[in-house]
Length: 158
Image 1 (spheres, rainbow, N blue to C red):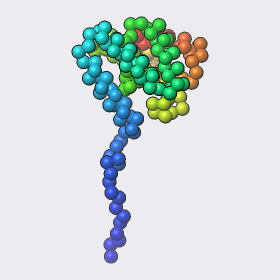
Image 2: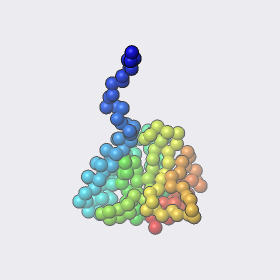
Image 3: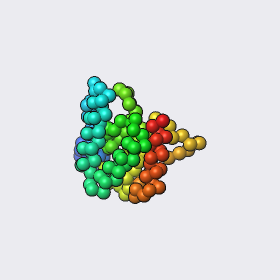
Image 4: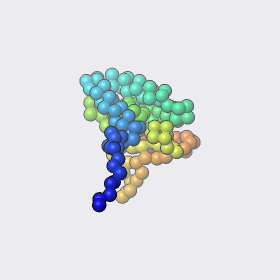
């Protein structure tokens, strides 16, 4: 006689491959791309800066302080990069309609992890031999860490 197997009712949540934070990041980038369409370079820089500052304002105090300082470091080291947001995170891109994100700040609160990171996209061309880091954990912004961020942002900007 066949035995009855317990069946589980499948829910919509079972189909979700991405976490809630990841889905929110994807929605944020869709809004960012839609908002960027048709902007002049001046509007892109001004609106991008406003978006970046808004994203910083929403962060917990420790992430916000680190993000604000990183913003100062990057804009001083690579003033040609355009401030913006990238998946809702502070980022810096090349100028122009098809500007590419070069670097970004990922606050630890975004994905509830142990440390924040400062990362780079492939267009940053930080190539260093056969292997190199594209994202750096940042625990404290010491003078040497700040110098390294500035060097990498400047090199990434070209």
